[in-house]
Length: 275
Image 1 (spheres, one colour):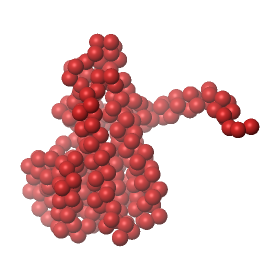
Image 2 (cartoon, rainbow, N blue to C red):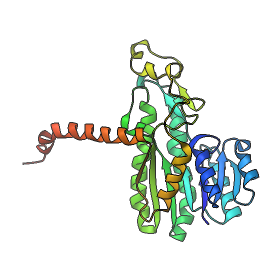
Image 3 (tube, rainbow, N blue to C red):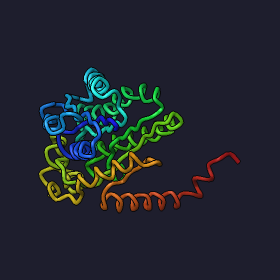
Image 4 (cartoon, rainbow, N blue to C red):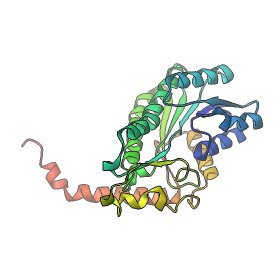
């Protein structure tokens, strides 16, 4: 029996991940900023679920959640950094405080969690760290520059982490979901307060008031959760797990477009070494 610690379990993929892991019989520390939002897990699974308050921007709460996991279950085998939210704004529209909060939650929040569990994982020479990204990191749509940037940072961080901890028996992986039927495009989506008219036909088209995606996303969170478990338990844990038909199609199209750009300039690029 493994013990999972999953951040951001109040709704969406985090809740689906927790449900799936608990259903199969593993222990899960289910967390949310408001512990009452995840109290139902402990009611339904009194022996294997621990509900805990966790704001990943608060180091004291991070330490307390990991300590509670160890006290209750002995160790954390799998960390899933899922906590986060969307932010839409043209780059010029982005509000400094909003952008800082976005990075503090997604990137630095993940780093806090990683640093909190790694010492014990290193001592045991085992463990898995899962960091949630987004297909947005690959596609970088108009109006999602800051969100794409923070997810791209998480992906780069995870790849370096993977190389550092693999010799120690620890796996690190990224999950890149496409559109799943969660609250991400609804309650969990924030945006700049003041739009700039010149961006109405680019970033402006993706503002919440114009978004019709919420509630119609193609992805099934329960199916995503089952694939995540399979990937974590695979003998060859992947670095990149892409989830959803839309994500798979977009991922390949983005790679093809990038390769085409590199090919156009390859001769010039290769001509920059000393003769």
